Image 1 (cartoon, rainbow, N blue to C red):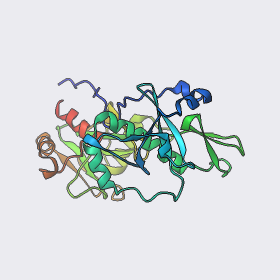
Image 2: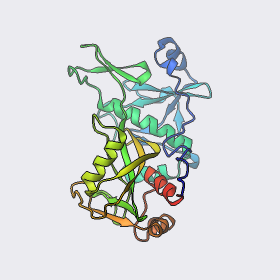
Image 3: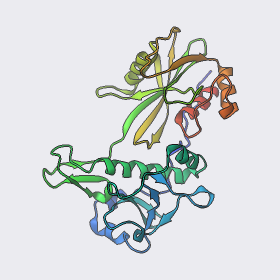
Image 4: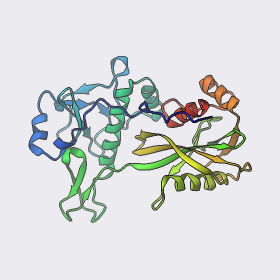
Length: 298
């Protein structure tokens, strides 16, 4: 059977309505011209979203941020400059717990979810990179928040995105390999995943991670879809691979369990939701959920 086309619709955390307006970032005068009463400030509780009616993101004005906060330029929306504030250490109370945040994100409109994801990643990067990795001195914001610069040694630092492979491994007999990490709720299984290491291409990273975590060799690695994942700032690269090996040797530092599932078991779990069946499927916000839907259509 011919594989369906790769997933084309934006995944969760992709597809923001914002125009990133790269040409404005390095133009100090243009950027300053956007910082007026019309500018919008994305309301955030440290890294947590603040939502209002219909669980949409809430926006305020630049007057809502503290004088010591740094401002990052998110982009343009309907011609208005949109910004987010980077809080100074120790100034605000801890953000809500992750279960509360996940509950908010689950029903947030797709475009708002994408805007929040980009803002969260950018603000988080600034909060963790206040000092120069080259000389240890303090850094200052530059290019509208898309760079930090060190006045002491002249080094420039840029927000980074870490590539992560996440892969469905299919046996020649049609079964699918899924794993359960220690941090997962009971009976939650998902695709295997791991960071791309220096000197690897995507295919090599997929093969190495599956070998390390499950002890089997894969072939025919193909790309399916990708997703930005702002926890803190990753690009999930969804792949599919085949194998003729059956016996698993699990790396217990990475997985509590790994199992083969039939197509019927996967379909039942995807329909059952949190009630589960043979297992509980990944949540809808995760690319693993979209990969399983893609696999079931093959």
